[in-house]
Amino acid sequence: MMTTSTPTEHTQRSALTPMVIIGILFFVFGFVTWLNGALIPFLQIVCDLNEFQALFVTFAFYIAYTVMALPSALILRRTGYKRGMVIGLGIMAVGSLVFIPAAQTTHYAIFLIGLFVLGTGLTILQTAANPYVVCIGPRESAAMRISIMGLLNKGAGIVAPVAFTAWVLTGMDRFEESALVALTADERAARLAELSNRLVEPYIYMAIALVVLALFVHFSALPELNVDADNEDDDEVADKWGILKYPQAVLGAIALFMYVGVEVIAGDTIGLYGRLEGVSHFGSLTAYTMAFMVIGYLAGIALIPRYLSQSKALIGSAFLGVLFTAGVLFGSSESHAISLMLFGWMGIPTVPDTVAFLALLGLANALCWPAIWPLSLQDLGKYTSVGSALLIMGIAGGALIPLVFGYFAETFTTRSAYLVMLPCYAYILFYAFKGHKMRTWSR
Image 1 (cartoon, rainbow, N blue to C red):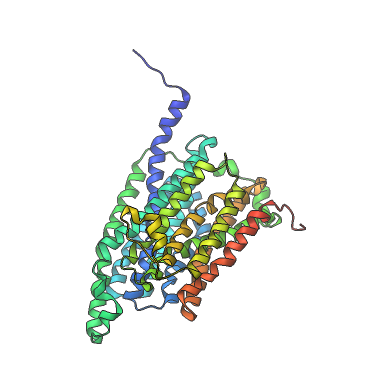
Image 2 (cartoon, helix red, strand yellow; image 1 turned 120 degrees about the horizontal axis):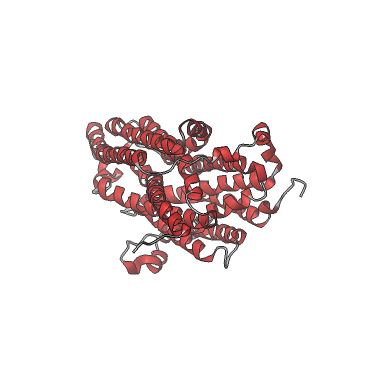
């Protein structure tokens, strides 16, 4: 008996393989990105860094998004999107291999070069992969696909620090300052070199995995995209500065700059702060923040837009950001009541309340990215692609705002440095209430 498939069934089947491939790539994005949270306190020990110096990890990684955004677009125009993803994975493999001489020499500058190369490959990879999420299926279900990719990305943020802790950060009591202070200079250097060399094996495996994934993408049935031909507009090319006439886009890019800054602070400094608060499993604390981000994503899928508008979701996110930041600043470092209430019953190790509030910022941050993008691009017409590029530049907030945090942490205290997040959330709140509604600069 012959069976026939409907066009809808055929579309769903044809979109399944690309969705699986792109889903794997988004997991890789999250794994590499949120590994930084465990890497920062590790390198602080290995390279004997203060907090300001340690946060150049985020600077080197995220500044690649700004520096390499336009070159990435040019590369994709020449190679196509599928080959561009292969190139991006290859560059990331090279960045992983840079960690081998960095670990063997404990030279911080080499680590930073490796992070910039990883960020460069990731910029190309994300620039190529994001259009697939929209184009590989019906446009009306694109938001659902974006949410699935977001869950995979943040889910990897749970796995990465836990895996790094299990593989690299075991027996860390031998490398704390109290254990190192009694050693001679040569003994101290030898012990830190022992710790640093723990990175060699995992980054070799990471490089191999990225090469295998690049070959898989190259030989896969992933279709090539041809989105640029449909979006070329001579007037837009000639007048890219015209985007500055749209307050919702310009103010939205600033909001994204603020958001990425606080997201990176919440995800990447929690291990640093947890170590200062005496948390033994500090390397896995980024997983706590990412777990709350996943909860936030699931809430967004369930509530938006049926029960909650994008602007109201952003208002709620900014308000929670202010509330949880106040918890970090004024909460108790002695009590574990918050984390005991949230996840102690699951057998997950508890943390001081101030650390728990820092993890809860993941919940506050989860819906900022999904809300800011559509609000910023609304009513841009032919300037939509230019507006998207402007928003991508806002990712530089992840490079610069954590450095401001690091400066204040080194000048004053780490805990007081979290004050830098309050004006960021205040600005996001302004954008959610008024900024996204503005269509001219006169009002």
